Length: 218
View 1 (tube, one colour):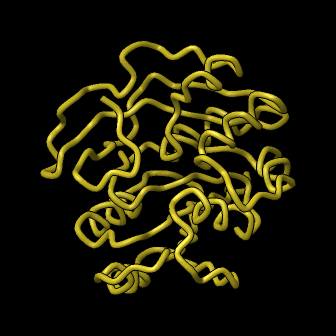
View 2 (tube, helix red, strand yellow):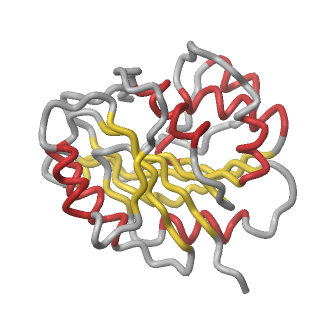
């Protein structure tokens, strides 16, 4: 069987404090998939790029070289990554400060690999603090109701929990926008309208809560 190609979309902005641990967790993924990390720096002034360069002999990494070099903010930076990403079977968003558990990619891919049509997979996570200690065993207090109506009221799925197939990606990139609320909200809407969303209650990564979170949840 041909190995599935997975592109991990990593947006970086002054992430040196936790980036090394995140890259280590990507390196430790236990999967038969071929993984490429497609990254974009959104104007870091710290050691983030130096950390990236230190991992290039252990991880397959490719820099986003689009013409949009300015600071775009997280939503448009991830959107730029997705719309310029190399061709693959599956795509996954990656925050710079989380820790992925070793089965995150493998379980997500196996769940949707043989399903037809545009598919978005999302999982739960544990919440960790700045010292990697689990402070909450589940991000979702209860199993979320994932419908277009519920997500319009309050989006509940984080981008870092998502993996989706190329069929969905081809639909997503048709949408041309210079302003979006957050990339994960838009992609959830597109998946619900055009395909199927699968939710996994198993926590597959540690979502880090700290003082510089862009989006946080109580």
